[in-house]
Structure formats: structure tokens, C-alpha cells
Image (cartoon, rainbow, N blue to C red; front, side):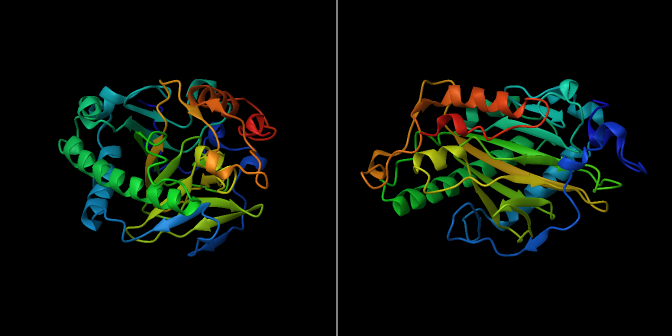
Length: 320
């Protein structure tokens, strides 16, 4: 538990050496801050009037601020030193012990659907956690499938096309305490999501996306969700939709918490993912291979855990 950034970072005057990123992995000094994300490319979008009550979103911000600031002993039941299945509170990346440098971040993650199966493993404190997060996850699920139906119809597919590949729902709550020198450390490095679609609720600036080879900061809009398209949507759309690389940067004055909900195929099933047949024609040939999602996920995780510089993307082996 002493590894959690929230357990030792309050009042520190300098960044510990094992949190100092090499220069090529730092955020850099100048990033354009944007209030507008282009809707036309659907790489990232922001959703308002989405059906999740504003009061519920505000309650989530209060709840997670309370959770991450609870005494260490109140979080022991869900803590682990590396990313694992089920409900887990961990720090930095997926395996702290094997990292050469750490991210300035603590994360609580857990599955959400079906609720009756997963809520018993969720945190017991704050005492309202299971009830409030359960209600929130139901509302986000409604919103998520509504948006997936709109995307399907926009692609010319049956509106229920994504039901099976979006059945799994999970949450990751990333907490980034204030950092004495944000130019040296990172909240989370650049990455693209392996799942179908992601919804992010953020309270302070920190999210950046890559657009046209440049990093662009996304200014939060109150009670809005940022939508990130995952690799599975890029593949099923036969490349019509693109998954954008994104990262999280830090600040020196305030903590930031992002509440992230993922929709994905069930990784325990032998589910085949491939470009929708309706989108493959003589003029728009198939650009991605068919594959089993659980195999894709295993290869994705192996790619992002690989030490040192990475060449290409996890998507490259699946291109035709």
C-alpha cells in the first residue's frame, strides 16, 4: 500500500527519480488546448444531453475523491501490487515491480456487468459505493448502447450490430495527485484502447489526444463524456472509423480523477471479430483480418508491456 502515489505524494517537493520519465516519453512544453473535438472524424467526441443525470455525475466525483483519500487500511481489501482480474486497486501501470519508471497514478478498476455478479467484490467503503456506482453503471450502459446504435446506423449496419462485441462493461478510475514538476512525470503514456468504445468523465484538464501527428489537450466540459473509439470499432468498420492515441498529463496544483467506462467483447469466449460484411465491397476491400478477440487482447497486452521503444502498433499484425 505504501506504493500508492496517494499514500506518499502529499507535500513532496521534487519528483522521485523512479517517476522521472526519459525525455522522449515526457509531455513536452507546448500543447494546443481545444474546446472543440471534430465530430466529422469520430475519433474522439464529447457527449452532452446523454441521459446520465448531472447530479449522479457530481456524486461520482465526490465519491471517488473520498475513496482515494481514505486511510490506507480502508483500501486494503482491494489493493494489489499489479493489475489483476476482478476488483483491483493498483498504482502506475500493469506491473509496478517490472517497470523501469512509474506513472504518477493510482487506479481502481472492476467489472460492472452483470451487477449482481460483480458488486460483491467492489469496495466496501465508502459504504454507499456499491449502490451509487451500480446506478451510475446502469445509466452509462444505457447511454453507451444508444451511441453504439447510432454509430451502427451511421455505418449502414443493423442498429444492434455491436451488442455482442460490447457486452462486457468495466470501469477504471484513474486518480492523479498533484505533481511537483509535471514536466518530468506522466499520468499515463500514449496508448490506444483495445476494446470497442470508451466513455470518460473527467473533472480537470489532463486528457490529450493525438491529431495529425500533434498532441492536443481536451478542455473538460462540465457533465460531458469524452468518447474514445477502440481498436475493435476501427476493425469492424473496416477502417472507416479510427481509434485515436491519447494520454494523461499532470498538474502541480490539483488532483485529477477520470472515471472511465469500457465496453468490449467477452475475453473468455472464442468470439470472432472481423470487418462487417456490409462494409466490404469490390471498391472497399477488407483491410483487416478476422481473429479471436481473446487472442487479440493477449497480443495487445504483450505489446504494451514490452520494455523499451515500440515499433508500429498492436493493430499492424491484423492488417491485410
